[in-house]
Length: 341
Image 1 (tube, rainbow, N blue to C red):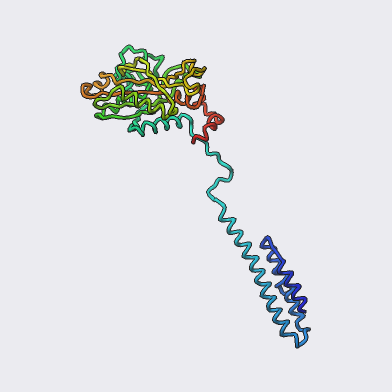
Image 2: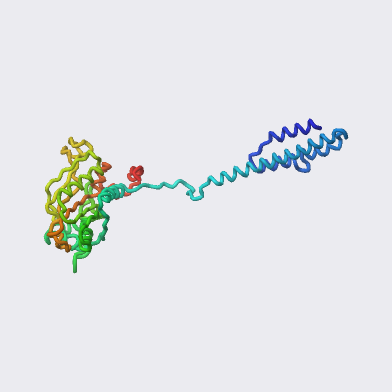
């Protein structure tokens, strides 16, 4: 009898179960009324009287062991189920969901804003649908200036006043100057529109960031140092700049700024057309007529302004040759900038 008890104990000790159903089968096999343990209890009556005490103790120990074994298997399965449930993130989507990436123009715009913000400039914004005064007249454009022609400007209405889609974000500068007394230090990012044929190098809409600083004793040297700092921050510490004389109605003197080509290091290549320089922006000292038209005394205050196309900067930074790619929303193109998020 003791030998049967030991064999059954060894059998139970080796028993395993991977599912609750398997555990229940073990319970029925060993602990039910027709189970192996009850069969041994039935045989107990045949044990000699002198051995009943020893065999009875072994049977009780076996029953306790089998019961603990079955309960232990149940607890193991329950703990595993709870752990699996805890590892499930119920907020996740049922299928993989691509997060996408930021648009390259947004990446570069934010970089530009961040650089000038660290130099004390704040952001100013204005409407894209503007009147003639803020886009042209207040900025010293003569009445017969070519920029007012229908070929360059999208006019909404011509009477009683000209209403148009702004051709530059300089209109934001005039709105700020009308309402704010110096010192003024702002950058104006935004979309602008011009009536041009769409091609790899031109589009009917694009994006600009313009800057304005007005205070006492502002000089051209201040402008040059700010633009040099910007160029080094945007394109690398080895970047050089040069300023070439130019003309803009709202600045005097005016200049266009080139940076050393970062592809050839200024030695000359196809990208910079062999010159070693690439134009990136226009700038100059604010014309006294502009200050006067906005209610600022040019005898007391001076200032500088600059403006750049975000598409142009993006082209230089990421070597994008076709402007149309920025507005076609081709996912394959946009995925190339995923690492820049």
